[in-house]
Picture (cartoon, rainbow over the protein chains, first blue to last red):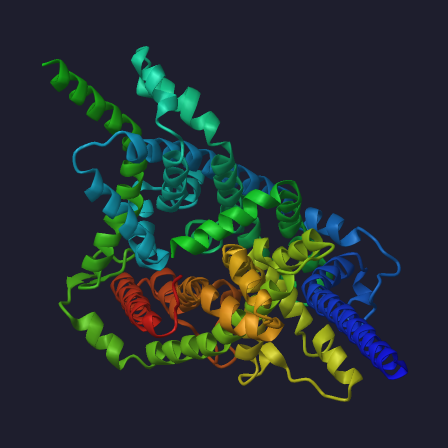
Length: 296
Length: 296
């Protein structure tokens, strides 16, 4: 009798012990998980912190060893000097202007073409669709040289047209919106169609309002792509007054190689609007990247 | 007759919706694409109108004997060999960590996504400053553990590793998001069934997660490969191909030839060879995928 109860106690002790051990290992696992993630997140965030810190320093505290981690005194002096010495305000405007018009243009052309592909089966639409597919495969570098020559023929070197228009058309955006339009049930349109509504009315009143998530995704993704673009603006723009921020920033480095506080102030101005955009629309931005990954 | 009119009307509407996009793509992408192919058979310097000759295959012969091309190809492959395994591993690792029950997931995702949405030019400048041999924080941190860091971007042996590390840092969040999407599409039932059978975390990862994630891995690999053959922005800003030509890459050769030397035909030839390489690599990958990609 005693033996049996002793055995039972022994078993339950070992069970409790095992459960406690499992719980401990689970907690330990969680701790390691957070530790690893925090480590990774620090690796991502610290360069940004270092950029901001450097941009707030006065010249004499930039080149110090050991580095001054928190700027003392902290000052906006390098931003003031950057705006005085360099047309950074103009470049900020150019970036905003070019990115806004590019986005607007893509929204219009892509949504219209996407509607044609999704709903208006026209003769040869498969062939045209293939043509769109083909442009997705060819890297931009293949077309850039003839495009540059074309701009020369048009007299568009160093103009906003040259900077904006080639970016207004996007096969990727067309695909993305077509996919979204295809998920809308046709029944919504049929009754409107019976009432004699034109495709334009259906497009404006039914298709577009029902596709706001996809349109939002294209909006933020196109805006970001244009804001960050470097290769084409580098080709097409020669004068500072037309440069977008990335191109202006690249020339800044050569100019004041050692004035890292000015250069970092410039990078803050370039990076900050995109971080704000992410805070406002992270769902759509992430979605855009996922779509861009899946198209490949 | 009514039907005929209806059809005609529908096609006219299709034309109306397709026209802006198709016209733009034709002018700014498809015509330049064809012109680019034609250009590979010519010598043309747009600044010297008399220099416009048909060369036949001479551009391709020049390319085969061009030491700069082979050096650029070698460096591009070096970049890919370092970048691809690192970015895939780090992206997958972070995605697996993030796919747990987690407090602060939005914060972590934001941290890893910050570099992804930042302009390459800004990121390249940030890291040029971080890798600064004398005053950068990398060499400062190394000095704390008694290591004298290399001159990084100024050292032919260390410039490419620095560019690779910067690129991995920037793109980890992108790969992470692709893998996270893949992870979320794995049906929960598989894990439940495995749990009933008493499977622990490791076997679940090895036998369920990783095989079912392989289609995502394939997509991520293809898209990273295509992107990494086109590596340019970071090289242009961080080293401009130096020091001593140690980091010249293919796209930089294209840009230099068309933009700086006015050798349009040769630049176009380089771009088509780049396209051909990317195309072949993609086809080979698509063939190889049968060996390691599991579909449900």
